[in-house]
Image 1: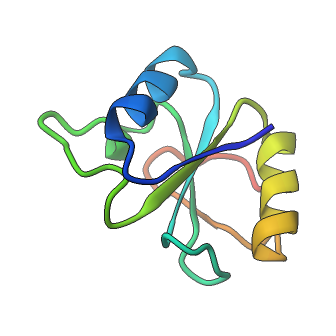
Image 2: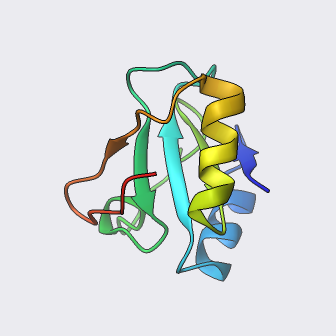
Length: 93
């Protein structure tokens, strides 16, 4: 099951740190096809020192497995066409 974090940075950081082998989708506050970017939870882009506002301008949806992300994307965004981060190179959903 996927969990979405909006305006909840401490909760997001805790989830990310507790699930280093999981997946995270960075997306607009209202998810829509086009911008969504899939990352591995241990991606350097999601661990910038001094980072803040992780879930204010954009939301993060987190899943322990790619199946969690697939289900969320299909139900919420209506597509599996997620951009893949070129830093952490997650597998295609």
